Length: 194
Image (cartoon, rainbow, N blue to C red; front, side):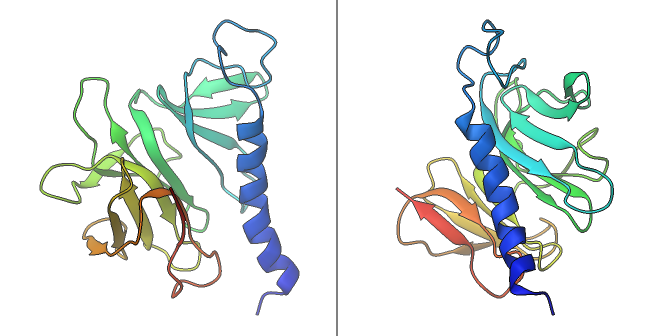
């Protein structure tokens, strides 16, 4: 059984990373070299790191696709330039999940990458027409368990098979963000609401 300190670290580390990234000014980051988070993107929608093994790469999901932090700066990952509105990672399986919309319009549905974002495969549309998750959280306690909420936050979906099939859950109010308990897969996600 994991110690209380380990549980706290598994919850605090991702929250701290998100807090640091979001506290750094990103406005006008294309034109302002003084920006501490300079890169070729206009918005950051998700942040993640694989917290196991030797990979300590920081990933950013943006309007212009996925970026990784390298020694020489920020590097665009793969050839996908889709607006990654929803983004989450499973540290145990080294899997990335995304949703959003391509530059050509429409929605992406739910996608998966098993090569650190170099390529993406659509797993499902989730509904009759593809969704555009704006909030997404993958469980670290149960592989394949993922929650997603489309733009507008008026719906919540859950899958336990890496996105192949989805169920709708009732929610009391509009969702802004989601967070799963990294140690307890039976607990519903923490929902931040409007």
